[in-house]
Image (cartoon, rainbow, N blue to C red; front, side, top):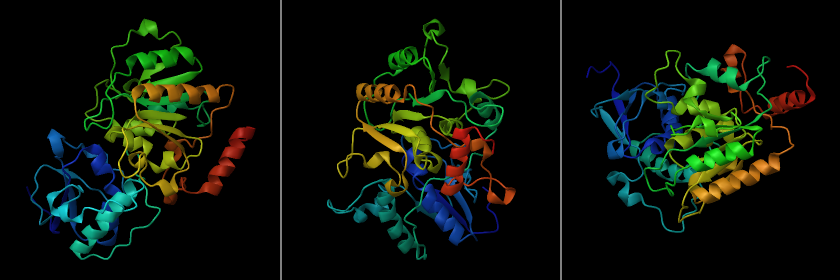
Length: 351
């Protein structure tokens, strides 16, 4: 490996995709405060996991993946790393979400590194969508004026969990049942299923690559960011709490959307039952529901969709319109502006 002129700092994580995601906001704090290093991330995790480059490229400071763990300084970011074994929190420590867990460890990591970094209480997961499928997704889900179509939408993360988070009962029959019962709702699922198209009687069940596929038709190595982008258009996000699901369910654009319903399937945590369904509970405005089994998940989805019947779809900002402020674009945290957009959208006024 040819190193740059700056000293190289390599982060590494022995966990899986979700374990990397929840460390990125803290890594960015370090990159912003101390920019004068060559920062990279090792591309291998636990259990043979290989991290794809798309997973870290949406932040202001690039964090490319490398295939060798040979930085001038190597920093482990997985809280279960043996270097941090002595830091285990007491049983009564007030962990309420993944942010509080990570904050506990990163305060100690920053102290060990002898860096002065304050962790803001409203820290969230707020990467940008640097992807090549914005127009194709946008065209599928929006009107000519770039407002999101009025049909209700549900995104289902139907992949099996790898870390024992919950049961791995197949979602296929549930998907078909939901799509049959709710003919006014579009359902999207992320992992391929052997579904006979003749059983999709309402033509409202879509495999997500068919929405954001490459122009050449070739499958992507990784479509986690593309599915997360699609999640911003939908009314309900459903799935097992795995890494790909977390990239959508914990993104600021979804958790700060008060019209978003997020149904997170997870066995529960001994510290706080729904701890692992939130990144930062304090900034969450979405309607988050914690379920523990596949049966409960789809019973809950049916209940929520039944309550939405005869109601207009909630207002969601079109993520394809989001750009840095310097380009005259929108910032999702500007609540006053979003309220005005919602008012105009509901009254039919163009904006």
